[in-house]
Figure 1 (cartoon, rainbow, N blue to C red):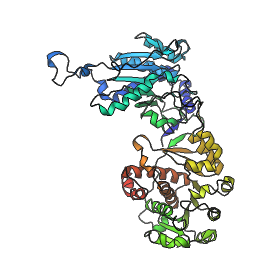
Figure 2: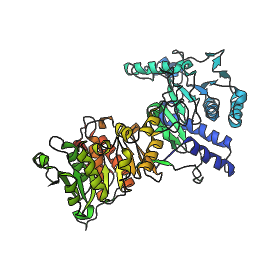
Figure 3: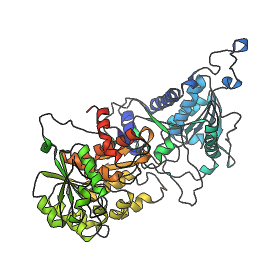
Figure 4: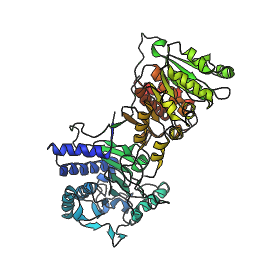
Length: 556
């Protein structure tokens, strides 16, 4: 799995490399700047070509030639007061050496730059000027549409992973609003690139590294806009912000460049979060249906049965050998009319559940979707948990305990998975939700990773906190993020019943013998892949039917 680092973890890795004598801070800064320049030319190869396209001047020009073809390559590099600014000075120097027109602005006092950043400031000063970003309190930098639209790269090297507080005078960065406005007219233009390409180093300025939240002063309304990049270049590993909250939207495309830290040992403090990835197992040819488990999905009463059937279909499609829907008498006909490969058994109340689970072949249970919030739901949950089976609790099985979450936590065991969305999470963990939803005024801000880890520790089982940035955590601190962003963006998953299918996927995998953490990570990944395979227009019923194609894509 790909690691997602905090700011402190990245600093620890860099410091360990420097202290070992393998590399100096100045060398790391040089490599970072080189990585940014490489990424720019990889993303926009036309910028690496001569401005005249190799045609030269005079009569040899083709009839299609226009003055725009000779527009020079320009870079505007905005450097901040820390090492992120030092990276920016390296980028400026490297682009200048390639013949670009480069302007450099410094936000801060050059005499207060860190040593490595100061060294690169001095190197740049041998090639060009450094203009103070502010002149008597006013911004000295403004974008002139006549100069900065075509073939211009604006490098955001202001505030990277080290930012811990909001930038109060960000509203002076008028270029942020200006670029946003230019981008709005881009679809109306043919050819060219109307706004400067914005490249952020490490993170778009204003984003908290650990949470992905936009650092703000707490004033309402917000008084500034944050940088929204076309390309973000980060180093060694992605950071949590590239997968959480507002980070992906602000980052644009994220490219990771090596700066030679791969041989450094695991010295980072704390448990490292990772990107969720599938961990699927082939079915064995000599096995039979009971070898792959028997999942039980409990249904609600008359008129509340669809969610359970969605979960059951998901469990069957993802590979459970058998799936049974346990239905109250009032819903037997309704369920029976809509089930074929999935079996149906009548279960009335907690006593009926306990009797059914006397059959130990039922090795995974899903309860909550459509179950209702009455007292009988609480009794059913308690009856299932006493049997110590692999159990997925979703929806009503969670919200039924909102008045006294501790009553649920006392019953949970390590073979459980809770799958709350934001509202359900707030009912079970109101204090954590309050911290998570509070404005991020200082960094590192309390993140969804922090909240989910604390929730898993409190519940004593795996918690899957749903969303575009789904976070999965175990009580021992293991954590992964299933980010549905960038090329895995699947906004059409925001449809009724998709969470019920996810609960079924997890149940089916646990029936097959997956550990709770493995099942949750794999199910979340497959869930997004199914949505991507179908595309826009998706409804929940479509999700399980995409599994065969997704499995083939994964080589199963």
